Image 1 (cartoon, rainbow, N blue to C red):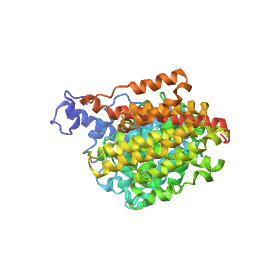
Image 2: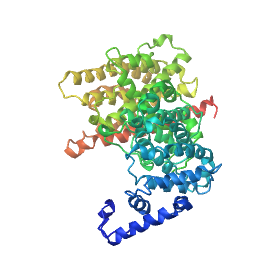
Image 3: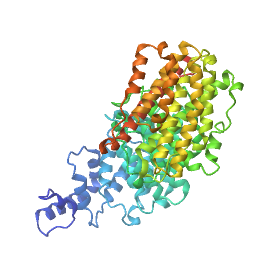
Image 4: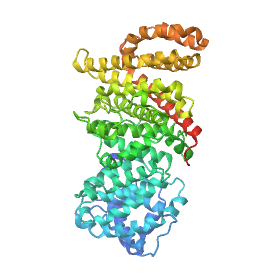
Length: 581
């Protein structure tokens, strides 16, 4: 039934007596005559190279009363269900053909047409779930997208709400797919969205979304080990529903994830299902050994995935979800931040800090850094496309953030030799300084200069550095070794602020430069060169093209910082050896 013009394939109107109408009638007669002989079982089990075959068959049967378009599925399922056990050989080809055929059907037709077929599908999928492990092993690409497409099409059938039992085998297949197979990300989104629309009761609407979220949480708690790219897809799954997206690195691009129009996202209720596991997600981000465990479980099943960057991308993604949820839960009393981070507003004085309290402070700083990193990713990628300004840490908490950094600066000289984690504390403190500076600047940039919110963010940042700078000065004067170490971190911070075109740097650099002058003679030559380069750097241009590229520059800085944070956590975890793989 080939056509001269492609648009003719979309119509079911024929001229009486022409070649197409004769071919259609011939196909109808042949299928009707051979249906009792199991022709549909043979068709769906065969490899068919013609991409338009199933569309042609569906259109030929569209107005044929003796054999309606759903009859091939009914006869096929009856033939398969008659067998005591399904054969794993060729079953994936059969599923691909069923998916192609169902894509061509009008699923919103009369409910009575599907009444006899839904129980057959239920029986079939319960049997299918038993043989899938073997069937997938025999498949060359382990792709379960056709099976998920079939489930998605079934969920679009009118009247499915009265046949809720079928959702159970669907959930088992979705779990197996996530744990062991490849699948198309958009098919998973469509599947959970369609399930949300197909049923009326909350339990049934969220059944598949809860299944997906549960698999993610089990993996974040390292109770299961799912493929690396699937783990990234699940993290994107919850972030997308919350209103964010993963950073567009090569890892994300290789699995087909891009930035969507946030206003037009389809709802899966995944973020709602994830809220009950908020504490587990928080533990995942806070644990210094998380990235080492991810690296040890790394499978490398997809080109572009890297064992050194995967963990950081996952952690930043989960942190973005946490940042969005904390932002939504905050109000005038900041209840969410007080509930989830009760220590933020109650830091211990530096004089009461012992080794354990010092380590706890480092843990809090690392967690704050990841939350701010996730928030900045959301600001850069989503920005004004969303009604939500991702601000998990209120600006009025700036003093408490500074107090945590002061604890590290005050205790580093004494505590740094205790362990590798203690030694890395200075790195984390300066990283938090970078992130808090850019966080405040991004928030001030969302408001017009001269407004109250703009001034509040600017004054907050000035007050923050007024509290932190004396601690840096004290470390610089402690010893030559510490002076070199602090200068190295301080230079990295200044270079990062220059790269991001920070506005506060122009105000603070004239104050910072005299602080470092007395110690310049003690520094190695390469640090002196870097310091002079910072001092001599010309102000950035303000052309239209350069202003438009600010977000890209900030995003690249965020990605590099994400990698650095991941690497220092990997090194710290490897050195402590206080975890089990």
